Structures are given as C-alpha cells and as structure tokens.
Length: 556
Image 1 (tube, helix red, strand yellow):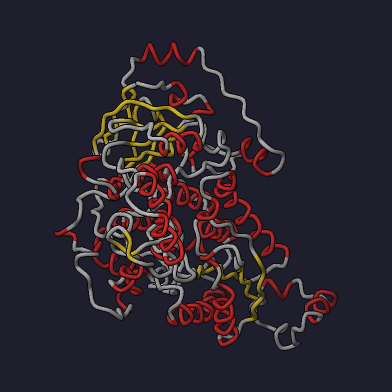
Image 2 (cartoon, helix red, strand yellow):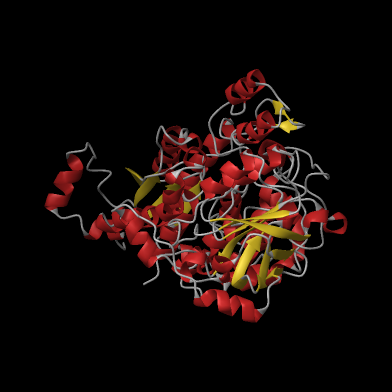
C-alpha cells in the first residue's frame, strides 16, 4: 500500500507530538492527513461563521476516512479598513496569506488542504497557495450575508451608510435615518451582500473548478452552507486518494472560463489582479490582462447584481448562481476541464440540481443579454501605456464615453475632503494618484470617494481615475489600476488641474488631451514626491510589489 506523504515523516518523536494533542493510534495510521486552513476571526463579518463551517468540514473528512488538522490563517476586512491607513495593508495581505498556508502545509507535510475563506484578498491568497503547493485542495467560502433594510430603492448593504453620508451632506436625509441605516444594513454575518471582490472571487473559484459546483453564493446563514462544507470534507479525501491536484484543475482553459464568468456576471475589477496572480502561481504562461481584453469583446453580460442592479446576492443564489450562468454561457466555456467535484465541468453541470426556479431578469439568456460585451473592460492610451481597468457593466450606458476636466489629488483623503466640501462639479474627472502598489503603498480602494460622489448626486456627471483600485460595490464612471502608476513615473504623475481627459470604455481608450511634446516636457521636471512609509511590511511591499498590470504580486 502506497504511503501518504504525511506518513513518511511519522517517526516516533513525531507520533509522540501528535499524541500530545489527543490524536489516536488509529488516526495516525494509514489515513490522509488533511489540513483545514481556517481564516476565522472575530473582526471580519465574512469569516465569523467559519468556525462552524470548519466543524462540518471535519465531519466530512472523518466520514470519508481522513484525519482533520485545523490551523489558523490571518484575514482582514476591507469594509472596516476603508478610507484610512488600514486599506494600505489589504492587498499586501494577500501575499502573507498565501505564504502562511504554504508554510503550515509544508512544515507539517500535510497530504491535502481545505481552504476556508470568504473575503476579498483571503480567497485569492488561498487559491494562490493551492496553485503553488499543488497538493489536493478545495476552497469552501462562508457565503454572503443577507441584504439589509430597504434604502434608496434596494436592499441596503455595508456600503450604504457611506452613500448616505453624501446624501446627508446634500440635505437629502436626516441624522436619524442614517443612524437607523447603520443599525439595519448588515442583518447578519457573511461576505458583503453585493457583488464586490469577495463574492466575485468566490464565484471565480467555483468557475475555476476549485469549489464544489453551487458553493459560491449559498448564504452564510443557510443550512445548505453547512451541507456544502460537509460534502467538501468528504470530497477532499477522495481527491487525495485519486491524486487530483490544483494544477490539474487550474489551467489556461479554466482561467479563461473564470474570466468569462466574471465578465458575464459583471464582477469586481479586482478579479483581474487576482486571476493574474493565481495563473502565475500555477505556472501558466498566459497574459491574463490580454485575456480579459480579448474576452470582453466576445462574452455577453448575462447577470446584473448590486451594484449593477437592485438584485442582491441572495437573489442571485435563488436564480441559480454560478451554475446557471455557466449553463447560459454554454459553448463559450471549455467544459472538458477537471473540477474538485472529481469530474469534468460538463459532468458537474449535468449532475447539478437547481433548488429554485429561474429568474430570467437577473440571469438572462445569451439572446437577451444585458450587453453583447462583458462587464469589465481594459483600457489603454497615453494615460495608461500598459493598461487600466474599468467596469462599464456597472454604470449607466451614457457614461461609457466621458470627456471632462481634471481635478487632481495626490492621495485619497484629499479627494474625499474636496468632494464633501462641494469642490467637485459636473464635468470634472477626479484624478487620485500615488495610490498604486508601490506609491500607496498597497494600492488602496478609492471606495469612499466614489460613494461620496454618489451621495452628492454627482455619479452620473463626473468620473474618477486612479492608479489605485476600486471596491466591487462602486458604480459611476471610474477607471483604476492605471499602469505604470504615478510613483513609477507613469503619465498620471504629470496631469494638471484643468487638463481634458477622455475615457472610452467601448473602444478601450484612456487619453490625456495633451500633446506628446507637452507630456515629455512635463516629465522632465517630475520628481517622485517624498512619502514617509513606516517601518514594517509596507516598506518591504513598496520595494518589491509589481505593477497592477502584473497582478501587484511580489516581484523578485
């Protein structure tokens, strides 16, 4: 009988250490030792239920003849980190998460790992680790939270109070209404109830084949979430015995499938960063940014979920979620790819049973698509020589081509103050720079700035561009991930107040209406502004982070 790799290290001392924790002789025999990388904590609402989810994963592992070994992984909350220095740490945390899973699995020579995560950088960080380690792995997310009290014509969510702050400044609501909204916008734990990065990456993991079919959008509070956890525990033992590994699943074809699903669902622009990083860890030689650009033109947008519409994640779940989207995409997908179901995507979709009827308004057929092109677009031009990313599927069609005059800010906080002070007018393009991976450092999300524009009633008459990122909940005309970033001498660094900027999300153009000669002249006198970076991880990240168009990975 062939040994599992965990048995190969089981000398007498090793066995003694395991027995000190209560493991039995039976557990230390010929059974696969399955790690559970659990990012549970009491700071992140999307991870608050993962302690219970882990227990059901354990049940599944033991029922299938494996041994469960749980360990902790850090996780930070984007929502709590928004609008202050904490956001500088969020994207860089992805690399720490990936590295910590690798260290724990390799130090203890685990045979396989179940990855428990729900939120923005934790899901991709764990998928990166799975691709790097290439031992059997499966991702189980904790599920989205339910929508909150009705606000502004839809179910509220965790971002609604920031929209409401702009409304309060504009005299549209009262302090009492704002206080009530804060109390009732998040009725329970789970990843945010809009289609931000957390849920986008949960769906992308399922589309990649790294989560069980139907897993991604089961609400956090539903019993089905626990059954999915149990089934995942059972399945990881099967995958281990059959030696089905992440690099059998994460291939160029499955990455392209995931991109098409992100396009069809109008997911977060952060998916571009994360799928680039996952492909790199899997050793796949492909330009993910170019793939997004190519597939935008051939993938229809079939679904609209908050913030692109008033439909919540719970509504998306009822409508059939990722399996329904993949079914509607049909022959646009490569269904021959392997999945953690232990079968091909074709077989997984054929065997999947829908609990609830279709919602043809939320998830449409290709013949009745919301748009013939995908929800995410890649832009290029003299302001983005490498690339920039936007999300036309989430904003009004009339904003897909926008010309305006620049109002320039060298950090997020200055832009937010100007918006709330009424300094931004219709026709302005808010430019926020020095917020890229190196310049931020950490590539913060310009979430609050967009929310304040919305609350001030400027979301249909202004635009915002940045070398930083955006939250998946943002709408309005925005362009992020501008590369090269300003701190590396990208053209964004020499934009001046009053310059004319042209944004074309249809033909993929981001252009500063200034001559090449003038740009060159301005660049001669440019110097990178001094910015004090505290000692610690941010200082390291600022030195080794790659450009956004390379996924903002740590680049050696």
